[in-house]
Image (tube, rainbow, N blue to C red; front, side):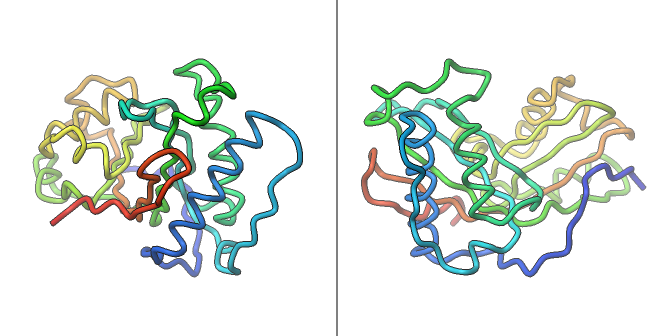
Length: 214
């Protein structure tokens, strides 16, 4: 059995959130992005009580209308209540170290997307090639760990790039700083998770649920 390095927390978690929840999550993430960029008074958007339940989530920023990545940060494991996770992820996304810090003039040309995640599940297989049957495109996100190396890709990524499962596994390895075939090595641990993904259609516009699978 492969070693598990992730910390698992028992929570009362629902894997699917309503469209109304998704809209609130995106609106809240947008308000926090603008707060951390512009300063001023901290937003006080009223959220339902279940936003105080522990949940992993990511905030993704994409340029509009090009749709290129501008920042993406989050927490795959539910260390914080969803509200706090969104706040921390929003702050991280504007400071994603792969890009320059987001500036005020960009806010009207950025789309905010929120992914609310299930708890990662360790994938246990008899042989590495079995991963090809265990991972489902359009359903699963992936975390790969080997020693100090760790990489994560959200469920929407392989759909957007039209990857097959093998490519998805290889790209997650590369994200971790590993060789693309590291998922075949016995020391490598893989985890999968799913998510409810909600996004603005345009900056400050309508929020929709992204359907990743048929």
